[in-house]
Image 1 (cartoon, one colour):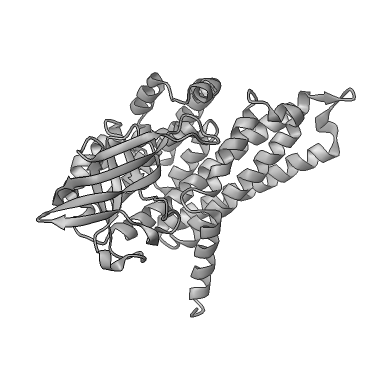
Image 2 (cartoon, rainbow, N blue to C red; image 1 turned 30 degrees about the vertical axis):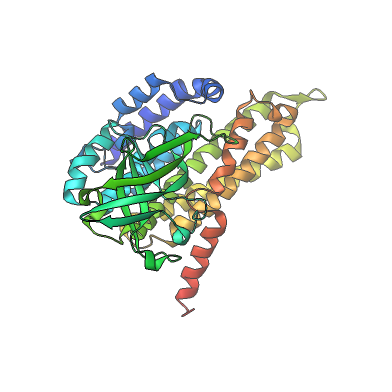
Length: 383
């Protein structure tokens, strides 16, 4: 997409977020749901398909544009982005990168329009950031597969029409990342049970649930890529790009917290003076600004390298590690700058403080990102 058209999209999203979603944040927090009319508006705006290729009805943003859009979407409650994030991200990209031509024609236009909501069903109780512990199985039964197992923390499972399910098709490779395949499973299929919504620390309105599979039978047309054992490769490729997107969201969240903190410091007084005149408050603002600028630059640089193919491993992990940790520090300073008010539920920085914590966990914990980075660098030295 050319820069002029993309800038128009950015402006539209920025205006929509500030005038439509930000005023709804408290309502979303209290009701734990995105209003139906907002979901409809997101479909009309094309937000369910910004990263899906134009030939399948999406907007077709590249990696850099994706990150820049994420920074705008991150300015408000992260549950808004979560609504359509899996269609564009880890679930949708698995199909974009590894689906057969038939699977792409059948599913991608429906994902892009928002007709279908997808979920990425990889995580299990014993297989989080390390998929080698995956226990869900897909056993061949004639020309079909019989899926059994359970997933947890699955975003949008309660809303989803289709799940991208990762299951072990080669049981002899248990305990490794080999022998894992990916399947498209309808949530309406017999044997699929979506559990109740998880009660989380933050991010109200972004629903996660357990999902259970009991003798769920799927045909060979639901095997992503049309062959076994591409599942792990598909998951890792999708997660790498997803980490860039999450980095952009973290930048947007931090920008909002900084804006709230600066505005508060300018008007709140102690001893008859605005607290923004106090050097220790100024120091916290300055530290947050510097770290935010660094995260923004790192994320955009990593996105450029991802897009041109020069680095699709180190950059996404480095940006996700730094941006998510940065967000935690900025959120903590935001609460501190607000003082007692920062601990009150009706203040935005309190909500963002709780929401920030999970960014260091999902789509690969900070610890896993460190391992990815270190092992990649040491591999070049023969280790």
